[in-house]
Length: 269
Length: 333
Image (cartoon, rainbow over all chains, first blue to last red):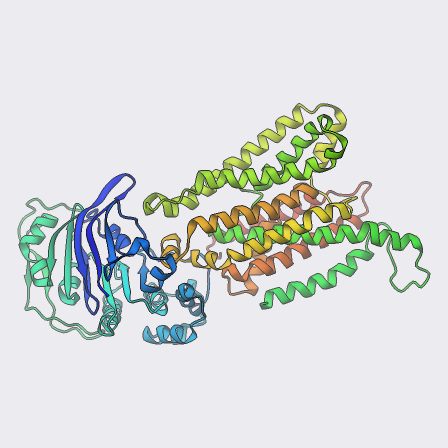
């Protein structure tokens, strides 16, 4: 089930944030969406999730326009994880995860149990969300998305507030989803994570796609220079996989040149 | 029916007979010589008053629970957000219009205008804040922030208009009528008021019930809720109708009875899983119990003239509100 942006233009607050972008995302892969602040990454993800109506162009799923889909059918197909962990009421973990079943209008006990088990949340299922750590909360919110058994998982910076171990653990879950045939698209700020874990990287700048391809190509030093205005090069060999809890061969990004056109607010780890 | 519903249904079942017996004239249920007077008091005074307390309390409780769920804010209340004040302004306007209307119309002008006020209030909120665009930057969180601000402005406008109507009262009699009525009470209400309020409030609670699952989805924020299939336009329409009916009909027959919608969901929440859908029915039952208990209490207080129910509930509600704010400050909410 291919999720595609076709000549997609999105506007927010009257400003064009994504301009004429075309890209087809494939299931079974992790696609990372990266770019400097304000590049339109989150807007693109919202557009792909069908939550931001196109000003021009279209988002399609297997060729059918997402806008024409009933909201409930869309919700069954696409799970969206917002950037800000926003939970209004102090509900228990299992009740929060069960909200993922709303598009199906069932209790989906099996799906909820499976989602809790997949993210090692069984011991926490009765705990109120206010008593969770940041890492636990991130896992609970992802479990909510998994409980809906969506064919696509779109996550906006799911790793931003997590420490290294939790980042790797969550990435392992995304990989498991991709292996199971789900499509995964994540907005990432950390280029090293994108380099080491994504199957494909989309690089955005000013609402336009400036690179699209396997990480080694899409995150080549010249692309980073063009996108972020930072001279950088990759260190280490291209080790592809880091399983949760076990650091394998991974590449790091190093800032090697002087300030050049770099902007201080875009720290590269 | 969840545990909280059961608890408050039992409480209500306990309070209802007690309320029928309590008053200036206490009725002894075991007195075989029960007079015709006692039967008359029960059938024509106590019973309609108790039923009205139950109906109005249920509407205010359910309306408050739905509003808190929609605004994702435990401090929200239809009274604070302009719906009850708009209904009250509608009712006050009827004191002005009544002399101009034929006698047959006069009896209906107050409830009709109060309902109209509540409906206009909710419609104004929907017009100002309900244009949930596809623009997530302004539409999503902005929609609820706008709703809050618009509600507060509406409450302030309705308050000012009501004050103006009082200032310009056509005669001292109308003035005292308006002021007394604004304070909210169930004194001297009959089956006539029950017949007006009960069907409207029951319909309103049913409409709010339809919104329950959408309110649950909002727990995760508006964007996540929309990703779960929430239709913001439908939800707002259900709330406009549901809260307009539950609160408007209550104000129409009893004046402003404040703080029930604010306080009740807090009493209920710890007994539930805290999701908005689990709150609506028990909040209706708890609101019914609270208003019934408060109304029975003001009836038996040894005061020269009966304490107005609206005043009594505000006297309980305002300190409770402060306590909520303090708890919020300490991060316990």
